[in-house]
Image (cartoon, rainbow, N blue to C red; front, side):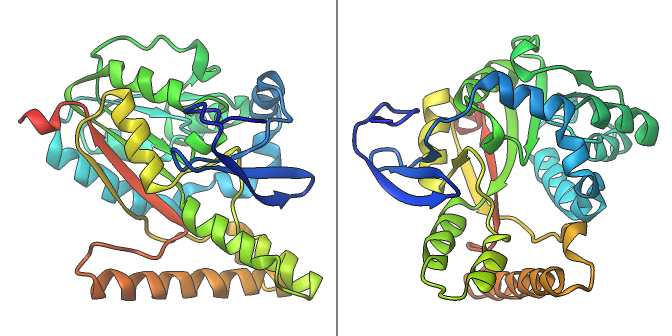
Length: 292
């Protein structure tokens, strides 16, 4: 690939290797991306049929309840409690909480099994379809949420433009994604670890999907999509159920994640709440907030 998939700049550089794929960095917009060796159809088919099976343990989103609550409290402080759309809703945990807090809820999820679990566990009916097939009705939603979704999508900027048009005036979008700066830098550093078993164990903590987003890139893509004020901060650390068993690799992952949490809290306090050393970042963007 000779240009950036977002801004089409030729100012890209090789950054590191994941398996057999190269990850490149756009010096113009700061996007990190895998070289395209996949088809969008294959990605859709995987998430529709196989994703739940491969990541079933992580579908229990009880560990994310504090994240959901923080996001909803912030949203409710800044917009009307009306209709909330959750994109990539998984098994419906965020929507269930939002409904209990008085929101009218709608959700989309491509995984057949996740949609079935959402109805079974929470009584939440999801649009079980590819995000590209959704009817993005203009000015319909007061809030849109996307938790760990954007970096999986072949064309995330298309979704952001659709979300902007679907939000009402003064609507807000909330997104949670892996902290691209942190994961990419740690992955590069891991190349220097001489012991393969240790290197691979460390790399299990790094999240490398189709894209890595930095705060700089987020500010650009959201501005280009039409959004006004953008707020970016470190997200709370959660622990995957895959990291709680007491075998060697899983225990080491749990300990490292707990250290992340401790370091995150220290940095957050030292900077008066302005920074958090976290594996994920929270992003809020407002449609017309700057005009209030």
